Amino acid sequence: MKYELPKLEYGFDALEPYIDARTMEIHYTKHHQGYVDKLNAVLEKYPELAERNLEDLIKNAADLPMTESDRLALLHNGGGHLNHSLFWQTISPEKKTDESLKSEIEKKFGSVEEFKKQFSQAASSHFASGWTWLVRDENGEPAVYSLPNHESPIAKNHKPIAVLDVWEHAYYLKYQNRRPEYIENWWNVFKFF
Ligand code: MN3
Image 1 (cartoon, rainbow, N blue to C red):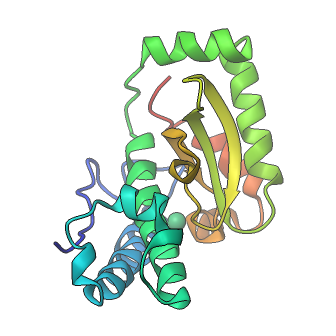
Image 2: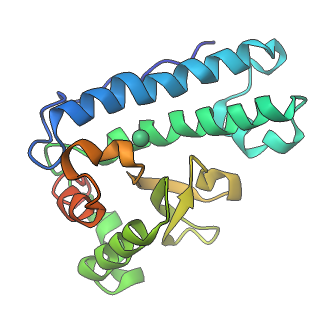
Image 3: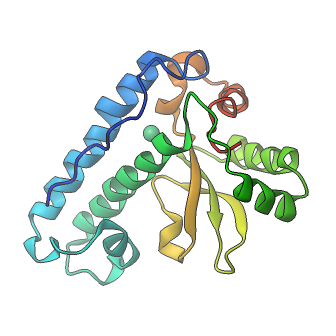
C-alpha cells in the first residue's frame, strides 16, 4: 500500500493571519509530500513489510531487516508523515473545544494558561529542528516535551494528542527567526481549546 497525503479539512488561507497561505501551501504540497514520497520509496524495497502499519514499523525499526540508511530513511520520512498528519489535525480555523481534555490539562498543569506556558517554553527553547508534543504518557496522563527531527512519542509508547511543528520551514516565510511570535500566534489556531 502506498502512503498518501491526508486530505486537509480547510484551505491554505484558512489560518491567516496566524499561519500564512504560502507557508501552508509549501508545507503541505512540498515538505509533507516529500516525506510521503521518500517513505514510499524506501518501503518499496521491502515488500515483506507491506502489511505492517507505520506506527508498528516506527516502534520496531531497530529490529527490521533493513540497511542502516534505509532504517534512518524510514524513521525520518515515516515520522515526518505521521507528525505532519497530526499537525494538520491539531490546528483549525475553528475551535473544537474538547472539554474532557481541557479538564485533564487543568488537573495536571493547574490551569490552561500554565499548560500553554510550559508548552510554549518547550517549543521556543528546543534547539534546531523538531516538534513539541502534548501526549498521554505511560500512566495515561498528559505530558509536554519536545523531540528532535521527526522523532515520535510512539517510539516510547506515549500516545500523541497534539503537536506543534517547530522546524523553520513551518514559520520562516512569515516569522523569519521569530519563533516565539509564531508559537504565541499558533495558539489562535490550536483546535482543542
Ligand atoms: Mn513541517
